Length: 168
Image 1: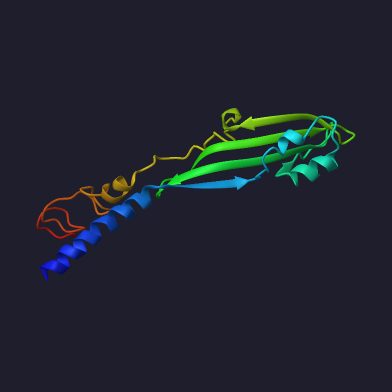
Image 2 (image 1 turned 90 degrees about the vertical axis):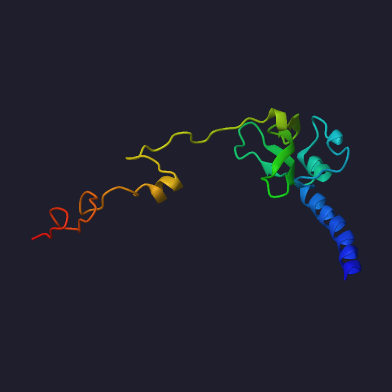
């Protein structure tokens, strides 16, 4: 019996350590547009839109307003998640290609995570009456407080006028 316990403990400890290390490793996910290496280097100003689509493929999104020409955006991001924690974006790349009214490349722009800005769409809050209670305040807030019958008096029954007396 001792030999079995010694053998199983020798296997159990390395297995537990391997599981612990595996649980703490990070999971990397690539999302969005994945370009071929050197594809963006082939795009030049004056190139027609059809050639850009032939080299890069379909864009992630386009500009919704065609004011002075169309715009294509190729967006990719890399996120990293460790164990049960929230994923964190570690890399973002946005390639903006702007076209003129003749559908020729007018300008190129490349933006990263450091170029992004957090936009607070709605920072206003609606005021409400009262106050916000924590979970513990909600659970224990009524301990020691009188109920609808009045004050807490030892020996008093609900509806009575004093100790040991009954009400009308």
